[in-house]
Image (cartoon, rainbow, N blue to C red; front, side, top):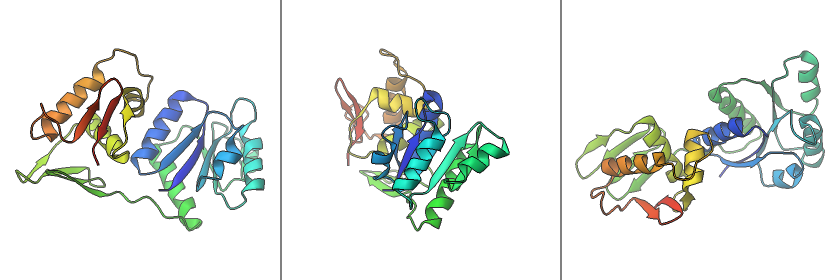
Amino acid sequence: MTTLLYIEDDIEIGNLVRADLEDRGYDVLWLKSGEKAVSMAREAHLAILDVMLPGLDGFTVGQRLKKELPELPILMLSARTSIDDKLQGLEFADDYLTKPFHPDELAARVEVLLRRNGQALPRLEHIVLHHLNVYMDEQRIIDTSANEEIVLTGKQFHIFNYLLRHLGQIKTKEQIYESVWGEPYMEGDKTLMVHIRHLREKLEQDPAEPQIIETIRGVGYRVKA
């Protein structure tokens, strides 16, 4: 799997960007400061680095990354738009994207840098689960037992997509909620549970005895591999 190191201290932005990149098939290592950036970057194929960070600023972190890992592509993110800031960033970074940005633009720039460095891009898969054929790239789900397409709402597909991206892994309610909604999970919130129930009504042959979305009591959910 293609791994991205993402360094961003803004929780709201970080949750949204990480969720979007994971939906596109990337494994995202998210740090909220630059102190451990160099050691974590050794596991990554590309670094996405915000300029405004607590402690070490993004320019300092980027320079350290480039010194220690000269082959690692670096994409700078910043609300700073002055030409001096861009030129300072591009002394070591491979690209510079100003905030606010559209997720599609960020993803496109990531793909360009990975291709330029000979890295394989994540492939969106066709997954077979019991009676379901799931075409991830087309966002289509076919019930082979009835030969019908199952239509999900945007949130339902986002939840299912997140679980599929972590096939066989147990994900907590907090992890799922924060990835899908991009905001902190409040203990006792029933929103995710309701969406899971509606998902099962559409996906499971017997929602009362689910074979696809498994509940891990007291923890969360997983899609069985």
